[in-house]
Amino acid sequence: MNLLSSGICFYLSVVICCLASSVDASWWYMGTLGTQVMCDNVPGLVNKQRQLCRQHPKIMQAIGAGIQDWIGECQHQFRSHRWNCNTMARDHTVFGRLLLRSSREAAFVYAISSAGVVHTLTRACSQGEIESCSCDPEKKGTSRDAKGAFAWGGCSDNVDYAVTFAQAFVDAKEKKERDARALMNLHNNRAGRKAVKRFMTLECKCHGVSGSCTVRTCWRALAEFRHTGDYLRRRYDGAAQVVMNQYGTGFTRAFRTFKKPTKNDLVYFENSPDYCIRDQESGSVGTGGRVCNRTSRGADSCEVMCCGRGYDTSRVSRTTKCECRFHWCCSVRCRDCAETVDVHTCKAQETT
Image 1 (cartoon, rainbow, N blue to C red):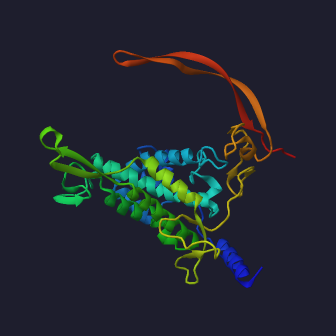
Image 2: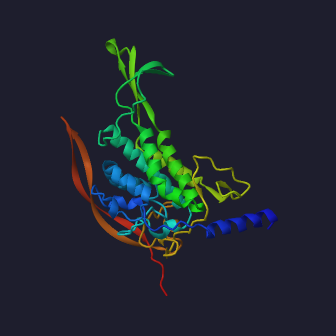
Image 3: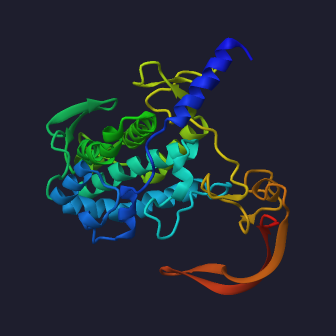
């Protein structure tokens, strides 16, 4: 090992040992409270978050209701992988001890949760659910795009308001800590917010005789959250392992062969566990009992998912819709068909 490599390894070990932010509780717990979000009943909020919570009860209700959406998106993105964005029932941290490790999975959770707040609040503003915001007030008058001039109209989604509030609320705890892990979380929170804005689209309606489109009325609209989820999943795949810079104010790449991370990249400090076996220290719940695909060669294959432990096969009867036909007008009628299929599940870890 050369001097540079040994220095990086030492520096990385120091940074990991000094990650002072403990994952005790999170605003994510609001998702278990439904629409009855009571600021004093959410453990782990810092003073700034609790203050915003009391001042904006409608926004908190929207955030609480939207938490299940981004958790569902996270679980969709990793449905076929050993780590499947599993949550812990009745746990104030929601994701358990997983987030104690500064891994790329933690980076993804922080990014998609921040993105989820922006998306949820933007929708709520446009739908008139929040008194303090509505449609984007900046989108008025006329403007131009590649097709020519158009007039702003309709209701442009007010994503800037949502970004500003999300930054103030979500980042409050990390800004209070300001240690290495907090800086990592802040970076990934920002990457998530930027991801939502990336997929804003311009939608237009034509006006004129016989649809001639002599005049266009346009507005800015959010894309479906799936686009953000897909994008952040790709960022997860290309996440950059980093170390703190010498000033403690930012990051530098952990290995010289990797590019310096941008504001759009996800960053992490520690390598991930393999998630094969249940390990309380790393937050891994293992893959015992997970369904696998015997014929696949990908991450959902029984060989990969079960980590070489083998799998059990059981025959399961299920009912599906079949022989569906369109009937004029206007319905589709199907039969209920019973079928028997083989289901393969990973063997549990052997206990000694």
